[in-house]
Amino acid sequence: MKYLIIAFLTFISVSIHAQKNKEPKNFYELKVYEYHSAEQKQMIDEFISEALMPFFHKKGIEKIGAFTLKDNDTAKVKKLYVLIPYKNLNQIPTLNKTLFLEDKVAGKASAYLNATNEAPAYDKLMSIVMEGFRFAPTLTPPSLKGSIEDKIYELRSYQSATEKKYWKKVEMFNEGGEVPLFARLGFNAVFYAEVISGPTMPNLMYMTSFESMKDRDNHWNSFRDDAEWKKLSGLKEYEKIVSKNVTLFLKATKYSEY
Image (cartoon, rainbow, N blue to C red; front, side, top):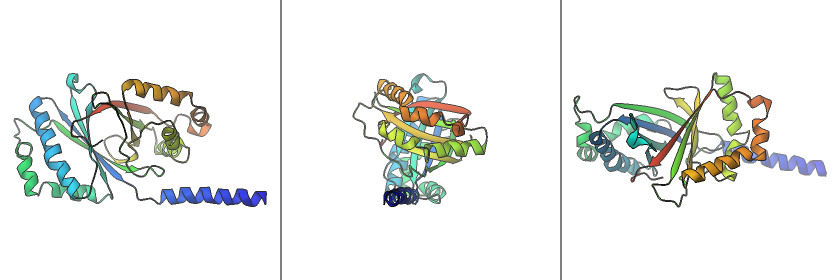
């Protein structure tokens, strides 16, 4: 009887994970605008808030995030990060093309669309395409109570030396238990995703969010001291699977929906 109960519970656990893995995944596009002047910032902000976001809302995409670097004002290369979730991969080229064919978009984004070679709307535009994790398939807007000035969004990029090592890190987040560990410790994760097209690969990215930088530091201290993390990170199969960790601290713009 004891073994039947154990077998039944194991079956239920596997079934739940299998069902979770069948949930439709979000695909994400992270647009990164680089610029240097206040005039460029105004053109990009107006385009995103008055043209791009209303268009995507009309197409059924509810939440779009827009962020700058925490120290953007003093940075030599200023950046704006726009995070767009999609229901399927085909939406990315289709909607990005249709966006510029809309008369309303053309009217609201005339300064951006008609920028000249001598005074461009931005210096560089990069697009990173991602697929949601197996155990975190969809985007979750964070529930933060602090002021927009204090809130911190931490965007992390984990690069690996080989595809084999990269897949082990993806596994570590999913089957290994990092995703539920972050959830238990209250990291307010926005998304976890595999980069399927971008300038740096193999690579995974995820975003967590906090009330303040102090709140962020406290959460990471708890993470490092957690017994479950110490056990997981001590497993030999997960040794040296990340070659580079790039961490960016972002702030939401006034028009961001996160």
